Image 1 (spheres, rainbow, N blue to C red):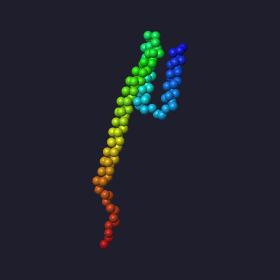
Image 2 (cartoon, one colour):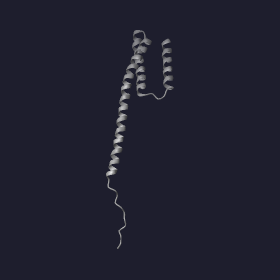
Image 3 (tube, one colour):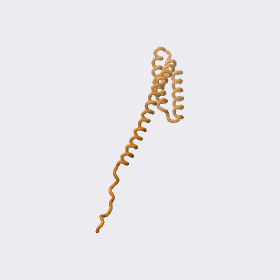
Image 4 (cartoon, rainbow, N blue to C red):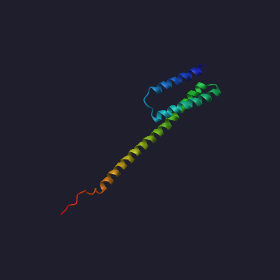
Length: 115
């Protein structure tokens, strides 16, 4: 019963912290997923040796660390991709500008003169 109450309290605190914050970054999302996954795995492993709370705490900490590292790498890749897309867009605009400059002007529509 005590372990169930502790787990429930942890979930409520985590949900409150996540619900009240601004949108999470990729790093923060990965940290949360890693912490939850690690806590679940640690709790299961800890239960087999008679210490589910200790296993969940240790697993949660290790999972959060691994999730933060992975999330940081993912966020770095997202930033690189966004920078590359901005450069592609600038190059496309410059290409269109140069193409418009090199187009010959449209022929004038003068009426033929009658003599």
